[in-house]
Length: 298
View 1 (spheres, rainbow, N blue to C red):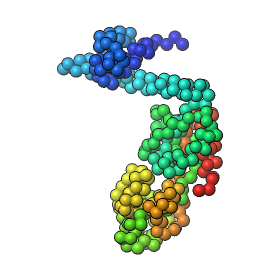
View 2: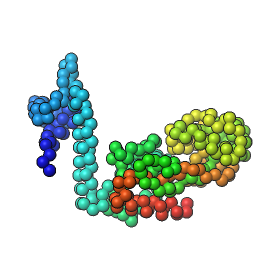
View 3: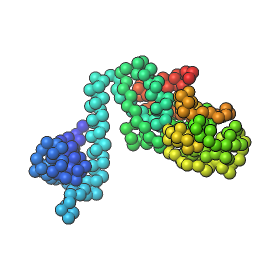
View 4: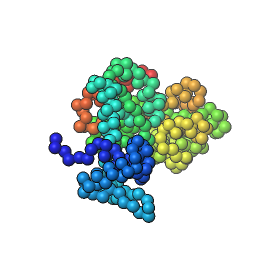
């Protein structure tokens, strides 16, 4: 390709020195001498024609150019490592599929079912990560993600899956110690557990059911559904959650549904992936499996 690049060993040495901000520590990590690391950095700087490090009050610091360069180099080295692991693990067949999911959905719904996908497609290795906030599919090493919302993620293809049925839940101990809870009209007497990313969740439910709106924004706030579930189990208040997340805890008696009131949210768990990856066979196999799995009872 005619690329003009420093050697891989030079780039690894630079990344280690930048991470430790110490030639001595980089040398220990790479099993080199301190002088060998220093010489490698000097040769790399001469090759690039750019100063990567400087000494400030006897401390090694990155220059502005070095700070920018190391971020790109680190990402490239991580990609090469992932590609190598992928090749060794799969011998060129199938491969690793990086899937990101909200914690509650991954724990309560996806992971208990995932064996059916791996049984059907043993050549594909799922690498699962969790995040409370939306994932950056363009800049992170993620092939696809589970997103809780509507078709509101720009630049992606989306398949609606499950999770639009919402229920009101609390712990038996909370219910025993507080005012009766028989419907939306009683909510003003109770502590409502709020989700930080969806401040209008309770308002939308109360508007659909009828009740006092003045209380719907009050209550302790939590970043994601998994924390709200644990807060409800811990007797902190009343939660409004997708039914699929609480089925297990209701069956075990950790949570109760004080009253049934059918409600379908506009939001649901969706599979999203970049339009540029529509031809990725691994994603399409996962997509078809998730869509079929979402139709299964229970």
